[in-house]
Image (cartoon, rainbow, N blue to C red; front, side):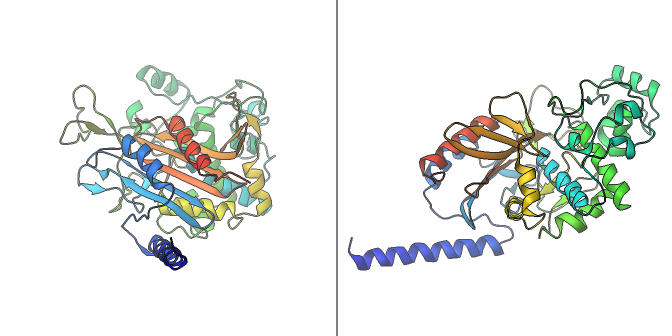
Length: 406
C-alpha cells in the first residue's frame, strides 16, 4: 500500500471512530458499533449465545480508557411489545446494585457520619445486642457477618416466621412479592446466635445487605432512594438509573424471562411462541429489595458509572482502592470479595474486580481491570447462560489482542 493510501485509510478509520464516540454520547435509542479488532471474535461468542433476534437477549459493551470498542445488542427487551434490546434499554443489574449501596455507605463514612467499625447494635438497639454488637458495618459490606438469610419462602417456613414476628402480610407469597427492607429485616429481630464469628468467614447472603438501606435512612433522615439519587446517582451523571418499585414503568424498560416449562401459570406472561415465561417482579422471589438487587439502569449509564467510580470522580481514589482490595477469600481459588464487589487474581492474568449475578431472569456479568482501565459488561434479560464460562471466553479474546500487555 502506498503512503498516500495508508494515510487516507488511517484518516477514514479515525473519522469513523470519532463519529462512533459522538454517537455513543448523543444517541438515546440506537445501539451503534464500528468494526474493531474485537468485533469478529465477540460476535462469534454472543451471536452464538443469543442467536434469535425475537428471543430475550443482551447488550455487550467493552471499553478501554475513554473509547468503547464493542457495543452490540442482541434480541428483544420485551416480548409483549416487540421492544428490541439497545444500549439504552433499562435493565436490572442484580447484585451489581450492592456497589451502589457500598458507595453510599462509604460516602457517609468519609463525611464522618458513621464508621465502618460501628456495631450493628448502634442502629438496631431492639435486636439482640449480644449478637448485633459483634457485627460491624464492614462485615455486611464483605458478607462476613455470620448472619443467615431466614426469609420464609414456603408455607411451613411462613408459619414458623409468624410465630416469632408480626407481619403486614397474611401469607408468604404476599411477603415475597411486596415485602421490602423494613419487613424483611424483621427476620433478625429475634435472632439469638450467629452461624460463625463475624469477619472469620465469607458466606454470600443478600438479606444482611438490606440492613444497610435502613442504616442510610437513619443516618441521613431521608428515604433510601431519595438520598441515593441526590448524593450518589445524580452526581455521577446518571439520569435514567433508578430503583425497582411495584410501580416502576419506563418506555424502554426490559422484562426478564426464563425458558418456559410445563403448563403456563395463571397471571404469568408467556411469549406467543410458547418458549419464554416472564420472570421478574411478581414471579421471582424478593425482587423488590433495593439495597442488594434493586438498581435498574441502561448499559450506557452503567458503563459511565464504572468509569467515573474507578476514576475517583464519585468517591476519592483512596476509597476506590479500598473498594477494590480483597478482604477475604470466597473459598473459590483466586476469587475474593472486597466491599460490594468480587475480586479475582489468576496466574499470568491481571487483577480483576467483577460481579456475576442474576435476579429473576436478569443475568449480569461486569468486569473491570484497574491496572489497564479495561471494562466490559454483559447485561441480559435471560439467565440461561453460564456467566463465568462466558467471561473466561471474553477474557481470552482481550488477552489475545494484547490488551493486558504492560
